[in-house]
Amino acid sequence: MEDKQNLINSIDPNAAGLSGKLFGIPFTEDHAEVVLIPVPWEVTVSYGAGTMDGAQTILEASSQIDLFIREIPNAWQLGVYMLPFQEELSIENNKNRDLANQYVRQLEEGVESATLEMKVIPQTVNEVCEKLNIFIKAQTEARLNQGKIVGVVGGDHSSSLGLIRALNDRYDNFGILQIDAHADLRKSYQGFTYSHASIMYNALKCTNVSKLVQVGVRDCCEQEAKFISTSNGRVVTFFDDEIKEAQYLGNQWAKLCGQIVEQLPEYVYISFDIDGLDPRFCPNTGTPVPGGLDFQEAAYLIKAVVKSGRKIIGFDLCEVAPGSDDWDGNVGARMLYHLCNWTGVSQGKLRHR
Image (tube, rainbow, N blue to C red):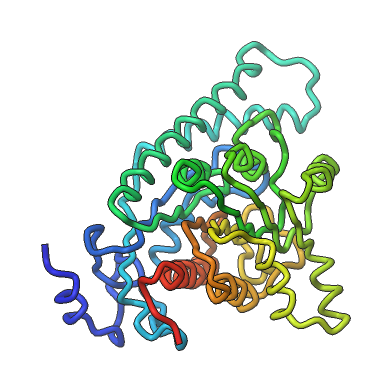
């Protein structure tokens, strides 16, 4: 294998990126400090589809972005690698997505009775989703054992549970910073235990997750609101309307970020659902909601976590879906670049100004 430094010396970061290589850089898994697991999965999506192609969309867009970050001049040298796409996952996704769709259509039509075949669909879907969780956890553990930083690129938001479980086995105490339009705290949704709408409910079953800090939420049901209010502070939600009202009253985003970061423990996992951004940045995401963060507001929040001295131990970026103009992939690739590099800074693998 070529030495990493020799590879870096051979690359012109000002030249056009290589197509098919993440961020246009020909790093291998051996060279990489950050390994990304692409998860083509959207079995339980409940509105718009397409996020199963999110990782591929991001990969294709990533080679055209400029690599220079003013505060992290050598960001591109970190070494980020996306694992090959697993065709078996796509096949399982498509098969079980069709099953889930049949069941959901029946629910939406208000059918009171169901055939035995239809009644077993939720159980079947739950079982295949749990198999996915086990697979992602195993993939994560293998890379953590090699000293890699691991991130998941979804797929729908449920794609990240295996990664969170793996980190739960490694860290005695960590928090989750969730950037999202939705609370994702439903015990189950439409009969599916591992619904994208239940990812944080399931993540909180991990006993070493001491805190969930949610930012940008603007859609939640009564059950979720009660869950938050009765969590004894384990869940702290910065609702989007409250953020906006504070800004209208003159509070600067930097001050609000300070309040958000203050709620987090030393070790932080970032769970980034792209619909946490204003829909103008992700018009094709499956469940867009008016409102949300500006791109630079989200990037500043990530940076604030790192500059506070906290350590990012892993992350996911989910719910990116392709569109005819490649805009969503463009935005997703740029946010992924920020996540990778600020995580690298937090772990001492990169320096910032």
